[in-house]
Image 1 (cartoon, protein in one colour):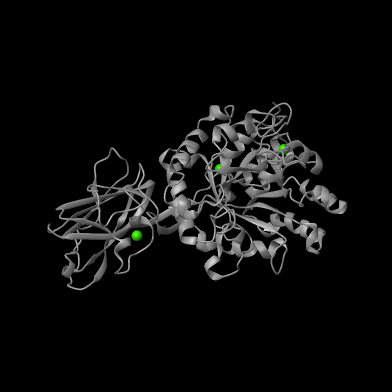
Image 2 (cartoon, protein in one colour):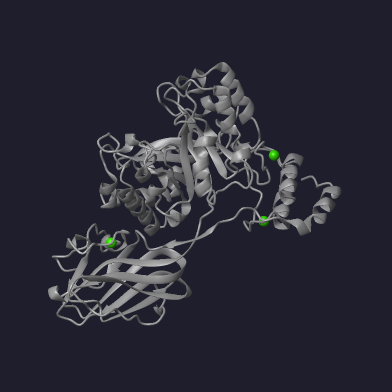
Length: 542
Ligand SMILES: [Ca+2]
Ligand SMILES: [Ca+2]
Ligand SMILES: [Ca+2]
């Protein structure tokens, strides 16, 4: 190993006091318990049951973000003649909670009463003892006609994964509950976000529809650091269907034939005619459990343990994903949110959620373009999404990338973002040079977009575009900012959101290393050298 020139060390030392923070995870406030699984100490009365139970949850009604109206009674869960009832919601991981409440009803003409007392308890681990949260709550007076009320507590900030609602009733009567809520702080995740640069991705297929990574890399004269592939939700197993992407001839992982390292973005779309409500109600529960367990058994992929960008149920705001089209998971925002949470919560219960990147990804333009179908209507919540993506094609009134991206960026740039798929196509009658340059100008206009994925199929192939456009693509993608190694782009080795001396030490330990997959090779050009040091320095001074 060569030593760094002493002058560089001196220069860095002189900048030590101005180390800057990188963009770091945003803290947002919200309903943490929405969609979460829960258990009850006493089954509901058969006449007023919960719905959609599975091995982790007694049902779904109490966290489905839907309140009952007075009638019909379908949205309520009812208990009869119980002296005490406990509901325990599992938030899946620890959060800082600030409020907890439940919604119930009284109508003594029908024998329905508010609980006599409600107490709330919390714990941060299944084996811990319950701790009282806030003061015991006083329900409002009962009413002969219909009334409803939130009974809740504003507590001090507390760390909790489990929240228990412990109620007593007067006995001989009904207790009806339709929703529980735990509100608090959500630390938005920050998984595999390059500190510098943007992953260079593609859906690289050849004319017969097979995955051929190196033909695309040869075409554009640049390695990929991300590959988009598809799997059918409900039928494609992780081990059997996706495992070979790492172990076979396809070249996702490092190997002799296809030098480099590439992340997988999986378009995971439900099989035909399966709706969001089907998924929310548990159709895929067993499939999800198996799929996620296999996803973290790294033997299934030759030892590779990279996260997978799980782009499930995408383009849900595009009419081609609505009933009665063959794809049917879109078009119903409430059920879509429920379906996404069901999937995520199962991943969480089997310990797979933390290893993957949940990529929520609408179409860039909504069809129809109506308020009810706006992307945000389908958003499952900050606790359920790691990266926000979108599809960017030459669509809409202003069919160029900046106009399509901007509305998403205005809402979600506090999270890592990406173009999950996109491409120009020749049939649009617009300026292809401008379009492709806009695509690569995201590095200047939208710095929180950390991956761009060219959809090189279905008439969007670069080989079918004007040769001048291919030339432009090659020239622009050759910029080192578009990363050719999944492991590149790392400046903040110790993940403290500052570019500082521990990072420099990690970098210098690999100084002058040659070859792929070295930490310190920020720009991914297979050597750790002055170019990388320059990137570190420029960020140090930001
Ligand atoms: Ca409800
Ligand atoms: Ca650092
Ligand atoms: Ca380098």
